[in-house]
Length: 121
Image (tube, rainbow, N blue to C red):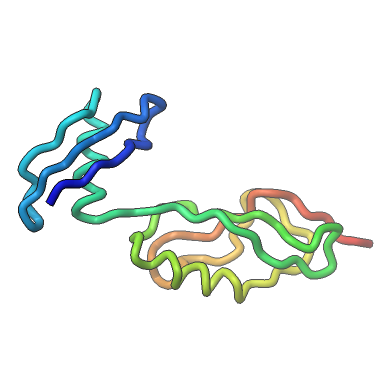
């Protein structure tokens, strides 16, 4: 199997090429630092992602607040987590850093509010 990635671990955005035989990585080329090699290995063995989204706010000056996960989750669970996020509705006010949902789906990642939304009143 041959895969090409753009590394996101540093601003260089190296184009990394991986050759793998099943779960075994045969070669990694194109990275300028160890971060690129670690990124490529993770993408093959256990891809992870962070999610940013919006949640509904009841009684706020704005109807939505931005949120994000505080730790990456397995890539294959993105749609499950997004489905769970869509069920959330918070009462205003909400503040940056507030936990909107703890340990989302048991994945050891909290959903954190990333903007302030004051109450309408």
